[in-house]
Image (spheres, rainbow, N blue to C red):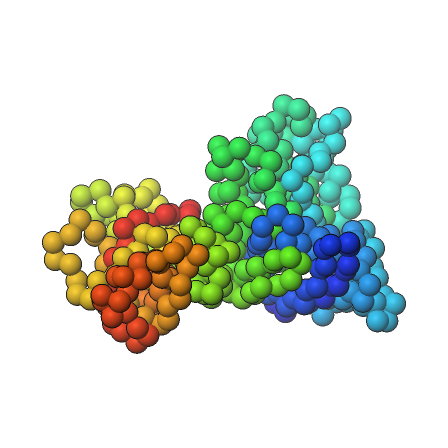
Length: 357
């Protein structure tokens, strides 16, 4: 599926005003990210038609769902979408299979096979159970399955992991990644968790006080030095790597266009693609390679720009590592001592790598 999702909304509600103009990719995962009260859920409800906004406009790959200028507004049940909320909202009197079949009956066109979706989400062994017999993570997977069985053209997810504890979040995230790899429909994913966004998103929209602060491919937004206050201590980028080799000393070598990084031995076979998150706080800079250092990962980089952070005495440095961006947070004193400036070639030393898959 190609094309794009276009959405324009303006809404005044007392002290809150939503004013957004979005053009999102018609494929992959687009994340709406922001702090509580930023307008994420309001925007998603407007996209779904659950909230009608004066002058609103919504088009999915050329099909117009709302154009208030022409008096057009398709209600939610006529929009080919699936929606997953924080609360799974399963019917307690129905089995897992019964809940999924309910979604299948709502499909406007031919639905995918129930057994295939159950297998994809790892719930095939749960089909005869009732919701009360499921964990929180299992209930959410059933809710996602039910939404997918409606044969949607877009899947809307409103903080689906927010009500889960860490153990259940870690349980369900691999299944969301499976959806990312296997499905050919766009997903719009609302979250206030930087980890979820880094792990799942292809496109990132930052919202603040009802307005779009930034919108673009994940790393192009994550690597902006003028947005450090949004991410605070979570500032950093995501690298798309692949497993190149499992080495004899229990390390795995990962490669990406900008170089090589080593991590503790991974179970995935050579060739597997892995996402890595590199936090700015875990990157230090050196003018020459350190020959006597415990830091194993050291890549060639060029300074793109730098900016002050919310932390007094610190700077955020944006780097180009091959074609990939990277961020480093260093002190102002270190920046002055090393003569950090745009165009300077140096080495980025990565003290820690967070694997996201």
